[in-house]
Length: 385
Image 1 (tube, rainbow, N blue to C red):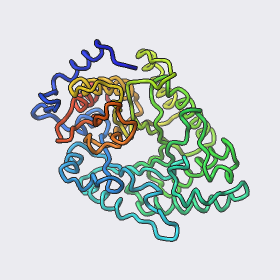
Image 2: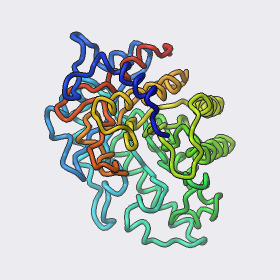
Image 3: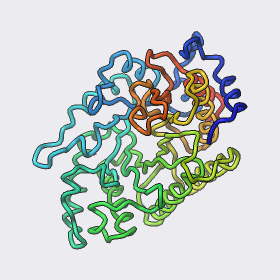
């Protein structure tokens, strides 16, 4: 939805304490790190870095140092995904990039997350996996491929990973149904084939990583446009629990925005927040923990001016975080990056005015934005675990 003048004014008031001239922000002297604020409430705060794909963020030393100061949990952006570890099945797995980053994180006492063992949607599987073109009678061959991948990956990292995203984004947001991929037919076809391969992946991960928390990760969010997505995720988790699948937590990616797609009824904030709270409660009622795994704010549709836009981003984040951080079974909070210029959002759904997005807690000069203040305030206000 578009922001009213009143909501923008309120957002500006929220961020006024940290907005400086030119849109940059200054943190109060002696401000604790976000991880220190999180730990005071029984959480740990973290973020991601990457070294492949775009220009290496990991080798941007000031940015890496900032991540080391603010965080105590680390996740590789792309380097532990199947398509990065094994682009060619005729060659060995390539763990070099992940090993370099994880060694840096461990030296600083950071906990490690693994992302992700199986990304269900075909376009995110390695090309050679999609080319296998399994049929309904190829169950044993399909199981061999998944078994080799999960055992090899988990075996390489051993007990150093505290939490694995075992399966990522299995649900179509448009329909609420499971995506189909090359493994669906050999695992039974239809929705059964989807659930069966997810169950198989989690059981393999439990054998290969017996000490790790096992997570289903997805980007369902608040608002009317995400209703089918949320319903599909809850249905999947309910079915997995009935099967005895060793899933232990739901990863809330937390790629949030303040707006609706064309043709979707505009959100009413009170109802939107109530529906999101109900979804989180339903997930926890299944006996599952929660994690915020990839938090950022998409500012598409927000004002162009930096001060107004930063304040709107901060207000959006604070509203979502106040609801989400109230969940008693939530113990980890990770951003998907800390500095705007390194955000994946820069290449995703560009703003109509083509301006760079500002959805992370630090600007390009590594100055804290009002979003950082909103995160800090939400951590201070949340109930302790």
